[in-house]
Length: 135
Image (cartoon, rainbow, N blue to C red):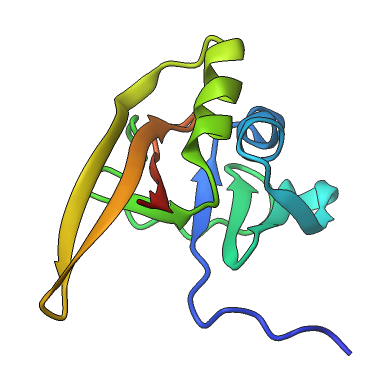
């Protein structure tokens, strides 16, 4: 029996599934849960973070307007991880630029200040990803 999926799983249109997998899987550490290569589609997961990637021009794309780079303007995807240091090292080894260097930040949640360590990076299509670990 399949395991239960999260209630919200973003599906990102990407220019090249191979380039996106090199980022999401190889650099960020996501696993491919399942894929449909003939459609340019992959479902990825990292812990409880799930995302779908779909290559434009293959399969059935739902495009509401002309796609302009960087894609996903006005949104960032926050992904909780155990350690941002390992990810930062992976991006540095790959010479992949960070959008924002790691920082320590506190956010008020229900009247309590919670600390995090976070950084931001853009995927090959410009989607902004914020990796965050409890601080």
